[in-house]
Length: 156
Image 1 (cartoon, rainbow, N blue to C red):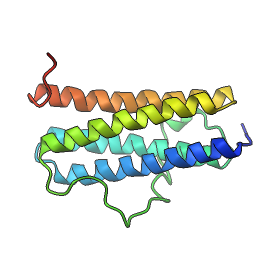
Image 2 (image 1 turned 135 degrees about the vertical axis):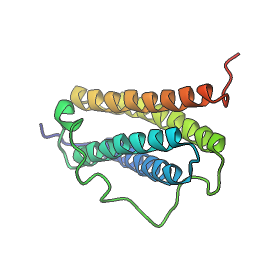
Image 3 (image 1 turned 180 degrees about the vertical axis):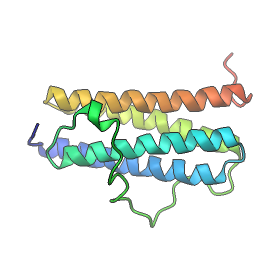
């Protein structure tokens, strides 16, 4: 389905695009820095899903509402427009610091999707953004559960 975006919708998608690029960079950098193999794998898995999110945002910016069932199985061209001059994340961070940064990032990104969802007039676009937001929340949950399992995050 083709859509025409308002200026505000386009600006919101450009913001989400930059957030997804930063998430990809962070997960990629942290996968290389993490000491624990479980954390490395968590970062690699989440990075791949973030690449799908970036691809989805790029499709929306090009005026196409992607089919989410087909979208989940594709990951092509997702990293093409990334700005590699910036390095996201903290170099030399401990696994706990990595997790804290990732959890904070996911909380922020999920919140920005919430705002964007309410600003779109097209129901199908809202549904696509809601799908991405749910996946961002799952990323946060996976980081939280990892932290909790390693004694890095105690719920009292």
